[in-house]
Length: 119
Length: 119
Image (cartoon, rainbow over all chains, first blue to last red; front, side, top):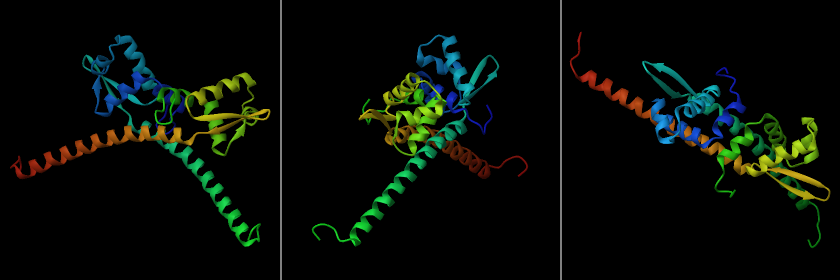
């Protein structure tokens, strides 16, 4: 996955798991060795590595070997890109809502200049 | 799922599928009958209904029966809540980055008032 082409399916799949969201929350505080991420989960190391693999494939984290430990680091640009996608969806929705409101106002104004019942 | 307690696991699971994201994009333009959502996908109706069920369980859409048709409507508040969660994660990350920068500046200032090598 390139930096400029985030795979939303992989990202949302990675974020859909509460254990992975908890690991991500820990990485917001700074890089951490795998052991520090595994500890609070109470999960076996292979399971933890599988979760980290899902997040790394989605571009949400990157890992590197340092001596005998593997360190994980958040890739904030992927979180930002995902937030940007959601903001774009919301903008489309709000543009439509604005158009509907403008239409409603235009119809009201038209009613006001036309003699109606009871006026 | 209550309005004020969006289930992020269900939401991200729903957003992780490109067919469901395409249906959501269509609903940004306004409510639509199931048939209009199914058409562009080329999928069988049971498959379409399953996708819509996943999105409805996540609170991303709601559906209602109207005569012989079932209409789907986006629930924009769920999109907003999801965007809000991502914005919150980013804010935590940026707060940490700001703290690191402040620390770096403080260390630089300390170096400046201390006689160093070559000064």
